[in-house]
Amino acid sequence: MSNNFKNFNIIKHNLKSKGNKNILKRIFKKMSLIRSFELQAYENRKRNNFQTLIYLCLGQESIYASVSEVMKNVEIFGQHRGHGIYLAYGGNPKKLVDELIGLETGTNKGMGGSPPIFDRKIGMFGHVGLIGDQVPVSAGYSLVKKNKTIVCFLGDGAAEEDYVLATFGFVKQYNLKILFVCDDNDLSVLTKTKDRRKWKLTDLARSFGLNTIDITDDPLTIYNSLKSLKNKLPALINIKTCREYWHEGAGKDKEGKDFWNRYKIVRNQLIKINEEKFILNCEKKYNLWSEKLWKKQLQKL
Image 1: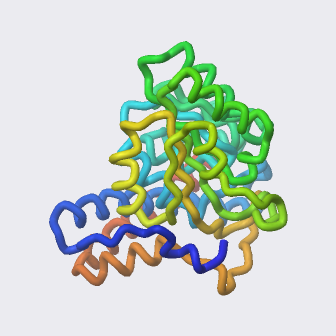
Image 2: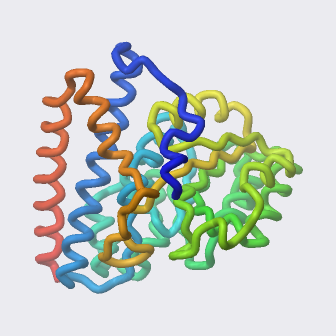
């Protein structure tokens, strides 16, 4: 993702105001939890402590932390990079580790790994491997459960599947209560958007009649954008972000001029408003928690 998008359509906020500060702290707390979990997943996969397919969301934590703060009491349809979605919505971390290392006590009895995370306790459905399959499935579910609000996550690569595009027209035809959240990291595995298509997802979704917003992954921008958009469903929010690690597995993408780390940016914002103690406490707490969690669950192998 071009670094030009780091501040794309960002909404400037007074971080010293009590309301904004508290919102940002709540979001950062979830970001820290997700990041600590994912870093342990990365380290243990790198050491070959387990060998299943793994899709990490490092770099994209702010999306899931922010969306979950606004879109509450919803049914969730995740994508293959779904650990952050699950954790942000209160999923069981032990079950997630067990799923990733192939144990029967996992979210899908250890048979699915990252993509099909399923947990009815938090209202989450996973996706089964066909890129973007969760999009039409979420529409069908919404057609039956019309009293429910649905949040469906997808990537910018999935947006190019024909059944995804057809679904946009379908949900508008029936005025379904769905919010589509596109994690736009500008990559379909390794292929950039400019090499795949000329059109913009928000333009296309708008042509079907969906309300749309196109922004960067700044937490308060996501939060306030969704405050208005959640009452204008069906809708799509496209959030530009950076994938920090490989499409799959324990490798690190090359960081260059086109990379930004939203976690570090938010961290620095909080330091500037005298919240360093809060940050250090969060990171210490979740780093220790995650290390102990992974160590304990791996002993079951």
